Length: 380
Image (tube, rainbow, N blue to C red; front, side):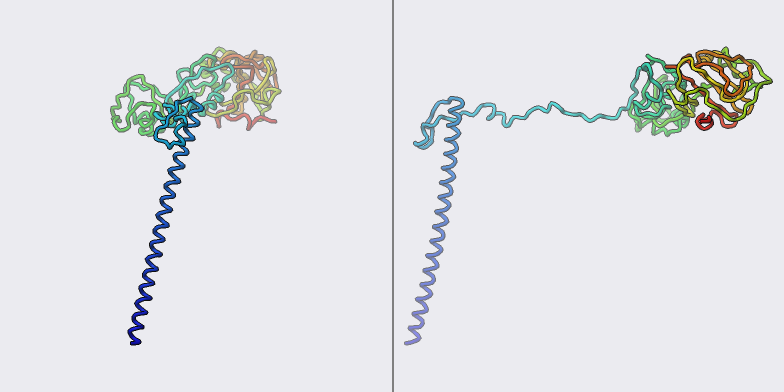
């Protein structure tokens, strides 16, 4: 009997726990359902409230007609919202970018520059980020490698990169041209400004028209030296080529000391400095008419006009393997064959020949070393 009661009470307890569990689950489900319904109601109400507010604002701004539509009775008298058609149909407007910047592309073709008063080779080259030699190599027909030939109004070719501008001649071969200027054939073919297809052009028969101009990027060649030659008292023949100032053969004359003083009282540069390949001398500042002095003792082997840009020119042979030259003079104070001592006045600063202003162009030349920088030899 006791066992029976125990089983009954155990069953009753289990049944009660099940009932309580079911009640708890049902209550929780009801709560969750109620919360979901409430959230939807709140969202719907907020949406309707937002629409009503928008309609009210639109009604004030654009004076739209009222409508009851499908809104609740409490909102039926609110003015209807009429959005501007442009906003609805075209979306968000975007202002035009009035400052669109297109990146600069590297120049690959030749341009031109008109020489102005006061220009010089170095300034022009610097303006276009080129070496001075490139300006000469791009304008041989105009300048003939002589920076003294620059004059206002000249139209110069300005290469896009350092190198040589070469006129193609009938019978030329790409390998020979490239080798002459110290570059490879591929350098010439690959340069965009030459208009040659590096993959289609036949090297042996490139089809380049006679008279066409090619940019030889990185190309170099020797520059023609227009300066006074090494005129010695025993061999004056070469001087005759340079103009009427040439002197005949001279056997005697003063001999120098191998020391050199400044040829003017000023020791500053007014134009070109020394450059062995382009400008083998100094352009020394000075007013027109200022005295020019012989830098060492010697004999005059050229005195007069020079045909190649130097204007009035004096060349003194010092008898020691050295010669000195004085150009663009306004006047010549010595004659052919005259012996001069160091410091003797031989002429005056001027602006003759291819010159853009009064100055003295001075050169110092050695039979052993050629034209040298005067800075290394003139006494302070």
